[in-house]
Image (cartoon, rainbow, N blue to C red; front, side):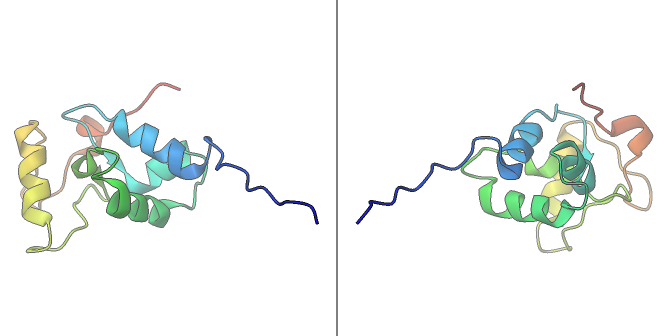
Length: 113
């Protein structure tokens, strides 16, 4: 009987590309979940980005607080991480408007390819 071997995971998976991209977000800038997904090759993968942040932020040392929703807002609920994320962004001089929205024209990171 032939022995089966398992191929190692490709280093160029969506997960890997998304993690590398998130790691590059500079202080004082934000990106959206959808932007990360699109730049990592999966334009409809915003929810996957959420899962990656949830499961890998600590082990990959990801600046999770710099990823927000497409409306320029924090998606975490009050009492569920919202305050921490806002505080971390404010420490990086990201400014919130009166409705707690971030001006994406000013703070959105536009990476060079």
